[in-house]
Length: 199
Ligand code: 5GP
Image (cartoon, rainbow, N blue to C red):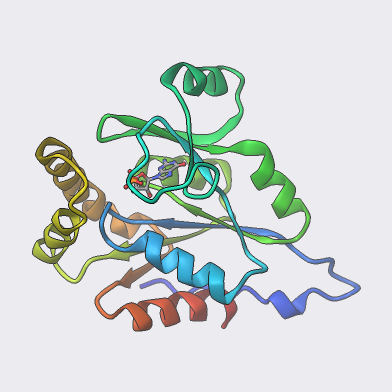
């Protein structure tokens, strides 16, 4: 595993103005990266989480503008045409993307900006933001991942099977990213992410 120096939030002095930075949290669907990210944000409210747009329907309990901006396919196509997305991908039959301007604004204002996105989008960010720190979250095993995807209980069998096929492809790409963290024990995984980000 590659070693990356922690991001020195406290190192922002008068001489070196506060540096914003982009953090990409990626890994297969169901691995728990959303839950890890929410805990991270609760513990570090100074971080900025980029709310994505998606053409997927909201799941029970999901709130527009908080979990995602739920938009139509035509609106999504318009955002792509207007170059308003920093990255975008199709995933299990739906489109997902990161609104560009809020991310750039928050980086510029010196914040740590976190994207929680799938593989294709993470690859696009690696190309367009080589200085972004990318963290790949792994499940303890593929069968555990399958159990987690199924236990969500809100996706159709077809959606589950598409997510599982995609999960295998994503796992094969784990080594492309700066840091790999196994989400076996949640608190340990969270601690490892914090160590990576804050030392
Ligand atoms: P879900 O439908 O389970 O919320 O998300 C499916 C996958 O899409 C997850 O791996 C999630 O991280 C990813 N995702 C969410 N937002 C974005 C985005 O803006 N861009 C990309 N490329 N993937 C996203």
